[in-house]
Image 1 (cartoon, one colour):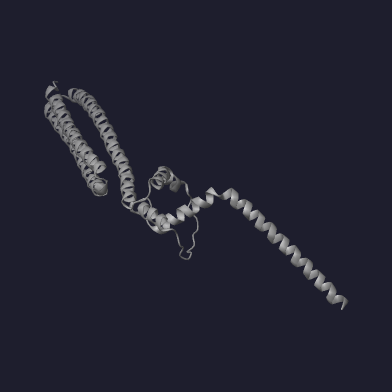
Image 2 (cartoon, one colour):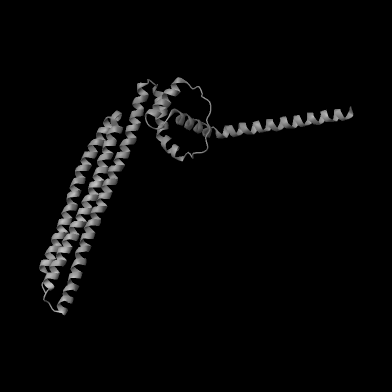
Length: 268
């Protein structure tokens, strides 16, 4: 029995589904171009970078939803074509003998499995390409966000008139500050009374907060206090040892005085 018409329907279903996937790839390329322009604008305009990046994030989220919809449409289109091919096979089988119907069913099963495998391969290749391109766009957006934060900090520091030597020192610290924040293990904290710090130091802290590196003055001061203690730990350990020695000597002297006083009382 001739299954040419059935195979034509399966081929048509595969091509229609593939066309939908190819259209989505074209749309993704256009999206990548738009996102790249937005990221370039964010790098050139650091003051507006966060707003631009938020808009890019919305574009990416919208595109992700559209890609999911297009993938669903492709799967549905292929399943629809397979269903039509099966109906055509049933139509061909009408009036055939039992042996012919069994042979037809076996050939039909092989055809459908072959086309399903071909569609599966195309779909998986498409999904892999889409995932890779989306990851590249997200990584580019994150890199741009970090660059913009750095530029905003530099502009904020410069606008406050802080000397070049201080700017260079803080800029160098910024290169490792984010990593240090990640490594610093959060522990129990307590509220302390207000402190006085030089105005210029406060300007630097405000710039770090404005650049988004810290959420508040309190968090920035706490971080640098902790880092200062960590940097001076060897010296502090030596001081602590001396203090403990002084405490021990005081305790010994106090004990000796108390014993001598007790002996005098007994003699009296």
